Image (cartoon, rainbow, N blue to C red; front, side, top):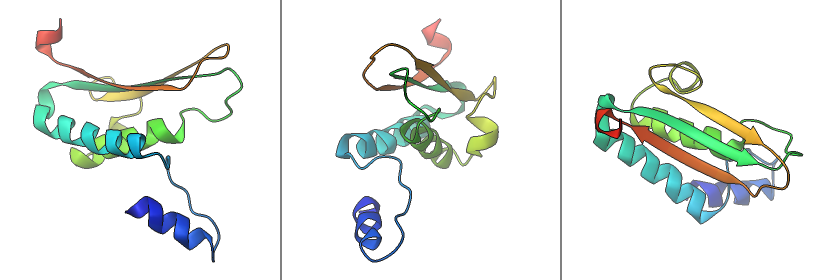
Length: 113
C-alpha cells in the first residue's frame, strides 16, 4: 500500500506528503473515484469539508486527496476541473467553533432536482 511505503521511507529519508493515513479516508478516496467513473459525465461533483475554526490549511489534504482521486478517475485536471469550476465541481470548506472534521463528496445529477 502506498501509505505504508510512504511511512516506511520516512524512517530513513525526509518525510513525504500523503493526504491521510487512515484506512477509512483511503477507502473513501478509492470509492469516490469509482463512483465518479460509474456515474459518468452527467453529474456535478463537489467535495465539501468542515473543520474547527483553528485549522490552518484549507482545503485540507483529505479534501484535496478526494478531489485528486475523482479527477484521476475521470482523467481530468484537479486544479482546473475540480476546484471552483462551475460545471465540474469544486472543493468547498467551512470552519467554525469546535466542529469535528467532516468530508463529503456530493454527486448531483438531473434526477437530483
